[in-house]
Image (cartoon, rainbow, N blue to C red; front, side, top):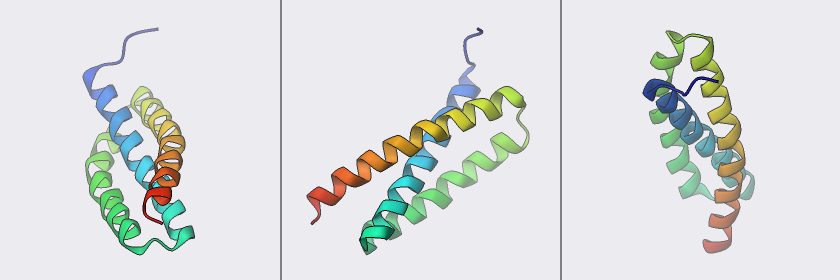
Length: 89
């Protein structure tokens, strides 16, 4: 398998960040944590503005890297949100 390009790594990392925020936001909404929920909501939209251009004009490999980053971000976001909730109780 070929090594990923810098662009593909960027796509992976921005997808990971965006979906980490989405997963965190979902947990925070379900627990009624308003201020962190608003902050992550802003972050989701802000990161999305960078992702949309990269993916809209990317090829299949870029989309696979994006989806993989999103998959990892789901788990990471859940774990971070659960940890934050224990701190901000």
